[in-house]
Structure formats: C-alpha cells, structure tokens
Length: 224
Image 1 (tube, helix red, strand yellow):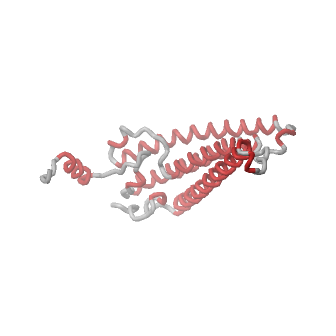
Image 2 (cartoon, rainbow, N blue to C red; image 1 turned 90 degrees about the horizontal axis):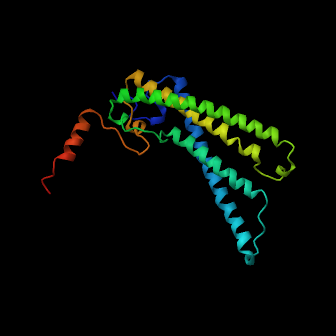
Image 3 (cartoon, rainbow, N blue to C red; image 1 turned 45 degrees about the horizontal axis):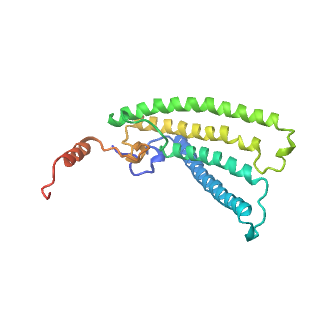
C-alpha cells in the first residue's frame, strides 16, 4: 500500500493524525524561514565583504568607508548560515549519516533503525543546546558592561544565540522526523522514495522492482 506516495514526503502518511500533520507543516514553514535566513545572511555577507574590500583596497574609486560593525556581522553571519543550513538539511533528511548497512535493510526495519539513530542524535542536540545557552548566558553576563560592543550591529551576545537557536531548530526537525517515521511504520503505508533517500540522494527500489533493476544491470543488452 502506498498511502503517502502522492503526498509531499514531509507530510507523512495520509492516515497520520491531525496533530502530526500540523507539526509537519510547522516544520516545513520553519524550513522555509531557514532557507530565507540563509539567503539573507549570505547576501549580506557578500555585499558587506565586497564593500569592505573595495573601501580598503581600491581607494581611487572613492567608495565610502565601511562601518566598524561590518567585521562582526561578517564573522557571525558565517555561524548563522552554518546552523540554518544544518537545520534545513535536517528537515529535508539530507544531513550527514552513515547508511552503508541500513540501505540493505527492508523498508520497515530501516525506518525503525533510523528512529533509534535519530533519537540518539536528538539527545545529543539537547545537550548541545543547553551548553550553547549556558555559553550565551556567560557572554551576556561578562560583556554587559563592555562599551566596546555598543557600536556593533551583531555583538557577541547576539551572535552566540546561533548556538542554542540552531540546535533547537535541529532538535525540532529531528523530533518531527521521528514521529513521521513512526507513523509510516505504524500505518503500514509505503513511504515515498524521497523520504527514504539519504544524504547522497539515492532512492529505494523495493521488492520485484529491485530484482528487475539488478537483472537489467547485470544482463548485457543485445544491441551491444
């Protein structure tokens, strides 16, 4: 049965409960916001870095001097891009993983194993998120009276928010992914290949289709 094959893979099976479908859509909206954030920070990074380079090295062009806050924006934009990119990759199930063994498993067993490994990754994210928040709180406490940070558009306190916020987004996407995998296992619906595809973009061919594909690959064509 392929109850979810005609739906977007991030929505889960057609028989998924309404709260899970709502969570899946929230995860999707967050991913869209993450993509927009990546574009925003990347665009700002390119424009500001180019402005700074031209102002410092091509003085005959009479470009206005770059503001002092550009350095901190460029520095912290890299961290925000990294964490937003990691969160977006988690949503589309394209984060890094070792799947040399799991790709050989049946679909249900593969989903079950992925639930366990994703749960472990989620626990790690919890500890990293807590550590990131502790680090952010320490920075806020230590630099509250630092007048040198007053001219910064993104000071150290704002920049370190990338740690807890980034890990929180990744954790949320992991949690939704676990629930969706559980829904596929419980309902018995056949998940689409896009949902099973791993980081390298491979697709799953199940049952007779897999055997036919292997046979086609090993039997030489008569035209050769």
